[in-house]
Amino acid sequence: MKDNLAVRGESHRNGSAATPDEPAAEDHVTVARLRAAGAVVVGLTNVPELCVFGTTEGVHGTARNPWDLTRTAGGSSGGSAAAVAAGLVPLALGNDGMGSLRIPAANCGLVTLKAGTGWCRPGSATATGSACRRTARWPPRSGTCG
Image (cartoon, rainbow, N blue to C red):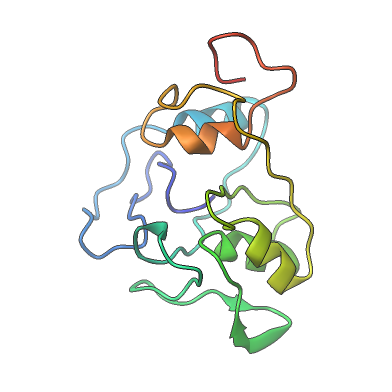
Protein backbone atom coordinates (compact mmCIF):
# COMPACT_ATOMS: atom_id res chain seq x y z
CA MET A 1 0.00 0.00 0.00
CA LYS A 2 1.34 3.43 -0.89
CA ASP A 3 2.42 5.32 2.24
CA ASN A 4 0.02 8.20 1.66
CA LEU A 5 -2.99 6.11 2.69
CA ALA A 6 -3.59 5.25 6.33
CA VAL A 7 -3.23 1.53 7.13
CA ARG A 8 -4.52 0.50 10.56
CA GLY A 9 -1.61 -0.39 12.84
CA GLU A 10 1.07 1.13 10.57
CA SER A 11 2.72 4.53 10.76
CA HIS A 12 1.21 6.91 8.21
CA ARG A 13 4.29 8.95 7.37
CA ASN A 14 3.70 10.30 3.83
CA GLY A 15 7.43 9.88 3.31
CA SER A 16 8.23 12.61 5.82
CA ALA A 17 10.24 12.74 9.03
CA ALA A 18 7.97 15.62 10.11
CA THR A 19 4.90 13.37 10.43
CA PRO A 20 4.18 11.44 13.64
CA ASP A 21 5.45 7.87 13.90
CA GLU A 22 2.22 6.72 15.55
CA PRO A 23 0.27 3.81 14.08
CA ALA A 24 -2.94 4.74 12.27
CA ALA A 25 -6.05 3.98 14.32
CA GLU A 26 -8.09 3.01 11.26
CA ASP A 27 -7.74 2.28 7.57
CA HIS A 28 -8.25 4.91 4.89
CA VAL A 29 -11.58 4.22 3.17
CA THR A 30 -9.77 2.83 0.12
CA VAL A 31 -7.76 0.40 2.24
CA ALA A 32 -10.88 -0.64 4.15
CA ARG A 33 -12.73 -1.38 0.91
CA LEU A 34 -9.85 -3.37 -0.48
CA ARG A 35 -9.66 -5.43 2.73
CA ALA A 36 -13.42 -5.99 2.63
CA ALA A 37 -12.99 -7.36 -0.90
CA GLY A 38 -10.37 -9.82 0.34
CA ALA A 39 -7.12 -7.92 -0.28
CA VAL A 40 -4.21 -8.49 2.07
CA VAL A 41 -1.95 -5.56 2.89
CA VAL A 42 1.59 -6.89 2.56
CA GLY A 43 3.37 -3.67 3.49
CA LEU A 44 3.80 0.03 2.82
CA THR A 45 5.69 1.25 -0.23
CA ASN A 46 8.16 4.10 -0.26
CA VAL A 47 7.15 7.59 -1.38
CA PRO A 48 9.06 10.87 -1.69
CA GLU A 49 8.53 13.41 1.05
CA LEU A 50 4.84 14.36 1.10
CA CYS A 51 4.50 12.67 -2.33
CA VAL A 52 5.46 15.84 -4.19
CA PHE A 53 8.52 14.78 -6.20
CA GLY A 54 8.93 12.70 -9.35
CA THR A 55 11.28 10.19 -7.75
CA THR A 56 11.04 7.92 -4.74
CA GLU A 57 14.13 9.16 -2.94
CA GLY A 58 13.16 10.25 0.54
CA VAL A 59 14.05 10.32 4.20
CA HIS A 60 12.88 6.72 4.65
CA GLY A 61 14.94 5.30 1.78
CA THR A 62 14.83 4.98 -1.97
CA ALA A 63 12.72 2.72 -4.17
CA ARG A 64 14.95 1.58 -7.01
CA ASN A 65 14.00 0.27 -10.42
CA PRO A 66 14.30 -3.52 -10.01
CA TRP A 67 15.61 -3.90 -13.59
CA ASP A 68 18.47 -1.42 -13.02
CA LEU A 69 19.27 -0.50 -9.43
CA THR A 70 21.14 2.63 -10.54
CA ARG A 71 17.82 4.11 -11.72
CA THR A 72 14.80 5.41 -9.87
CA ALA A 73 11.45 3.68 -9.96
CA GLY A 74 10.06 7.19 -10.64
CA GLY A 75 7.04 9.11 -9.39
CA SER A 76 5.49 9.01 -5.96
CA SER A 77 3.98 5.56 -6.66
CA GLY A 78 7.43 4.22 -7.57
CA GLY A 79 7.54 1.98 -4.52
CA SER A 80 4.34 0.28 -5.69
CA ALA A 81 5.67 -0.12 -9.24
CA ALA A 82 9.01 -1.50 -8.00
CA ALA A 83 7.22 -4.05 -5.79
CA VAL A 84 5.17 -5.34 -8.74
CA ALA A 85 8.09 -5.31 -11.21
CA ALA A 86 10.27 -7.21 -8.70
CA GLY A 87 7.57 -9.87 -8.30
CA LEU A 88 6.98 -9.13 -4.61
CA VAL A 89 3.23 -8.66 -5.21
CA PRO A 90 0.96 -9.30 -8.22
CA LEU A 91 -0.54 -5.81 -8.09
CA ALA A 92 -0.30 -2.68 -6.02
CA LEU A 93 -2.26 0.46 -5.32
CA GLY A 94 -0.93 3.87 -6.21
CA ASN A 95 -2.55 7.20 -6.97
CA ASP A 96 -1.82 9.83 -9.57
CA GLY A 97 -2.20 13.56 -9.81
CA MET A 98 0.72 14.46 -12.08
CA GLY A 99 2.17 11.20 -13.39
CA SER A 100 2.62 9.25 -10.17
CA LEU A 101 1.24 6.06 -11.73
CA ARG A 102 2.27 6.51 -15.34
CA ILE A 103 5.93 7.47 -14.79
CA PRO A 104 6.75 4.54 -12.45
CA ALA A 105 4.94 2.10 -14.75
CA ALA A 106 6.98 3.30 -17.72
CA ASN A 107 10.24 3.24 -15.71
CA CYS A 108 9.63 -0.29 -14.40
CA GLY A 109 8.26 -1.88 -17.58
CA LEU A 110 4.66 -2.15 -16.38
CA VAL A 111 1.23 -0.97 -17.43
CA THR A 112 -1.10 1.00 -15.19
CA LEU A 113 -4.73 2.01 -15.02
CA LYS A 114 -5.70 5.54 -14.08
CA ALA A 115 -9.34 6.36 -13.65
CA GLY A 116 -10.55 9.65 -15.07
CA THR A 117 -11.81 12.52 -12.98
CA GLY A 118 -15.34 12.48 -11.65
CA TRP A 119 -15.43 8.91 -10.34
CA CYS A 120 -16.32 10.31 -6.98
CA ARG A 121 -16.56 13.73 -5.48
CA PRO A 122 -13.36 15.13 -3.94
CA GLY A 123 -13.46 14.94 -0.17
CA SER A 124 -15.75 11.92 -0.05
CA ALA A 125 -12.91 9.83 1.35
CA THR A 126 -11.20 10.45 4.64
CA ALA A 127 -7.69 11.89 4.48
CA THR A 128 -7.13 11.85 0.70
CA GLY A 129 -10.13 12.24 -1.58
CA SER A 130 -8.03 11.74 -4.72
CA ALA A 131 -7.09 8.19 -3.76
CA CYS A 132 -10.74 7.25 -3.88
CA ARG A 133 -10.97 7.97 -7.61
CA ARG A 134 -8.29 5.41 -8.34
CA THR A 135 -10.16 2.46 -6.93
CA ALA A 136 -13.82 3.31 -7.55
CA ARG A 137 -16.02 0.73 -9.27
CA TRP A 138 -17.81 1.23 -12.58
CA PRO A 139 -20.42 2.53 -12.91
CA PRO A 140 -20.09 4.89 -9.96
CA ARG A 141 -23.10 5.35 -7.72
CA SER A 142 -24.36 8.87 -7.47
CA GLY A 143 -22.93 10.74 -4.48
CA THR A 144 -20.70 7.89 -3.34
CA CYS A 145 -17.16 6.74 -3.85
CA GLY A 146 -17.65 3.38 -5.56
